[in-house]
Image (cartoon, rainbow, N blue to C red; front, side, top):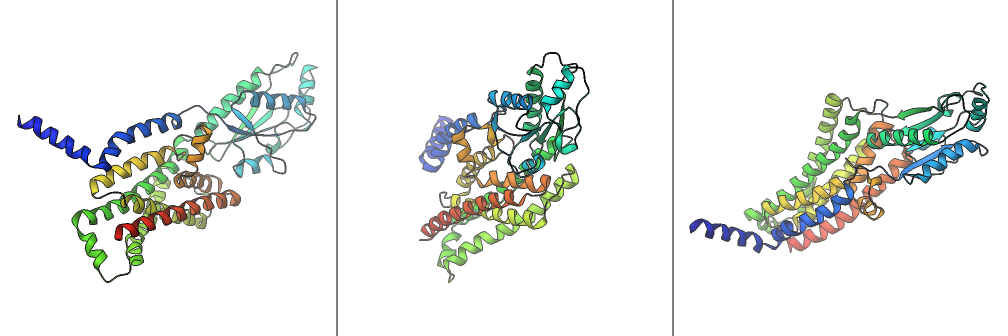
Length: 375
């Protein structure tokens, strides 16, 4: 009878702790609800631009057929070159009609004539419709190619002597290497996990061992305590950023096409955000066991809503709003943009401001909670 009693005691002791009870009972329900929406391979909400003459009826029909499929959404790229629109992150893909118009070329094919005109790489080749795809996201790039090929094949042109071909240009990852897409996401995840867990468990360990009270009673200002508990982990995080980048380039031949200052500034802001998350979580826990459970619960949510493995665009609109509040999502997008595209300034500034804003909010919440804990 000793063993059943011992098991009953452990269950009661575990469920008696309100923090552990919430993690055990509420966390699985919340995670399955979020992940059920977030984890989907259906590629939708593809931002599609088009470059063709106003009177090009055939190109317009193909574009409208793509929009009618409900997988693509219209994006106006007026004032931008097709490559510029893809580079800036405004669109996921652009269809480019051949010089002279696709309608004119189709007319020549129907009558048996040769294609009219030719163009450079940016404007299509001969009578072939060109499709520019942002391949920094391999999952979406492959799907976009397949969708557009199917849409063009279904567009019938009676009497045409040869089928319409689509010339696909996969920009920024022409070989469609999966590691080029996944490694930046893994880099973001490793950095967040490392910094957040180190910060949270360090403070929890001080509470559990009783040395936290000693620190509070020491003749040191409270802001110095906060800085002293955060700065070392920020330095560790920045150092590990270089280690992770070096490993990615050495083992996976990860490109680095952007500016070093963009990369450094972005990682600095993200590391600060990660530290703030760790401090905030530490104010809700009393020991290391609680801190680890709390960290892993938060990490799974942040990771799945970061776009590291499952594109945010595939999620429902309401969940996208939540995902874009996640600094890890902006970090992942920025890392891919800087490493693969070279860092479009407008795009980089937009997401840097998002990370900075998240960092400010997290810092305010973390410092207020930490002061309450000190009191």
